[in-house]
Image 1 (cartoon, rainbow, N blue to C red):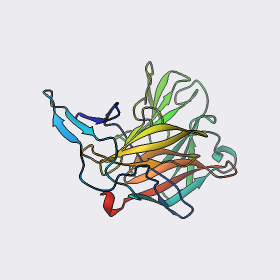
Image 2 (cartoon, rainbow, N blue to C red):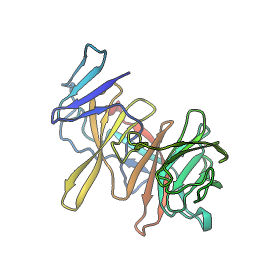
Image 3 (cartoon, rainbow, N blue to C red):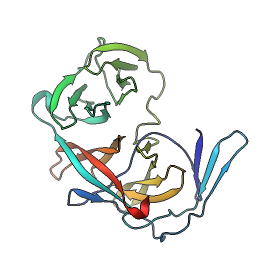
Image 4 (cartoon, one colour):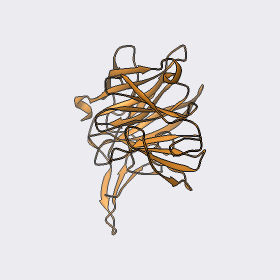
Length: 265
């Protein structure tokens, strides 16, 4: 299915891969919505061109205002000692059983946890041998339940089985993950088909990261502001996984359950 999304102020976005978020002091996180438009009838249009491409033209303002999305914290993983220490988490993957894979760029390894957050093992190390990494940047779990790692440091894409055993590698002669990775051309899709598109907005103290949220039909429904030091990383099976830092700068990975409130359905 080929879908193009437009907004009045310009720019084209195509359906991509995974996300959304915001924070609060309690375990249920309410989103901050940037718009001031009241709820009402959507004022855009949906057409199909001669090539069968669905084109969605959205108004400048989203459909909903107020708190239409919330995130309930389910899990927090913090680094440990030695090989379990978080040095520079750059990517997150989740397998079919809910196992969590954290790619550490500085340590050049993958830290593996079960769905309850229990540490299981470390996969990989820095080196030039099969399954060893140079400067790994992105990780994904394939539909075949293989670990795929983008490694610009060795100009390779590594494939490992779910236990970490080397399978094969491919030359990386192109900017791999340039679409799916959230913080570059970031578009993510949740389990209900909603599309979250990352944007930056200049503010007094630097850039503000937020998401424009589109429903499965491509209609622009709301905006979500991301708090400082919270980086949305992955949507999997209706869960949002983030990389975060507390006030002391200690890193963690959190998992949230996404809930759309009635006005945002």
